[in-house]
Image (tube, rainbow, N blue to C red; front, side, top):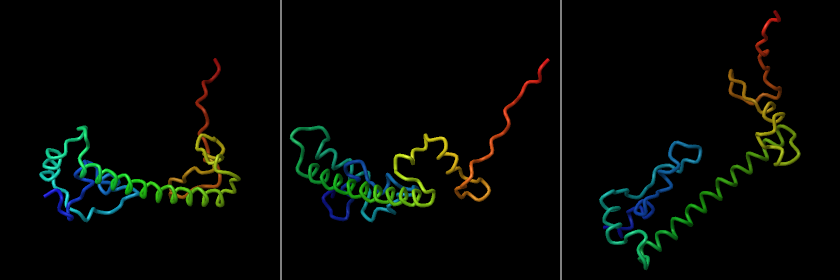
Length: 135
C-alpha cells in the first residue's frame, strides 16, 4: 500500500532526491525506502496531481519532500561556500566576486594541468596564432 512506512513518499510524488543526484558529487546514496512504480500509479489514481482540493497525503508528502530538498540544498550550499573559501586562500583571492570564471586572469590561474589534473598557478601557454606569410 502507498501508505506503508517502508514506501518512499518522495517517489510516490515522482521525485526521489536520492535518484536525482545519483552518480554526482552530491550523490545521496541509494534510497532505503521502496520504489515501486505500481504503488506510485496507485497513489496517483487515489491522489491525482493538480486536483483541488489537494489530498491530505499529497500535501503532507509534498511538505516532506520540500523540507528534504531544502536540507539537501542547504548542505550543498555549505559545501560550495567551503570550496570557495579554500580557493580564496589557495589563490589569494580577496573576495568571492573575483571567483567568477568569466574573469580571464582568474580562469588562467585556475587552469587545470591535463597531466596531473591539479590546478596550475601559472597560466597555460597558448599556441601561436596561425600566420599567413606575406606575398
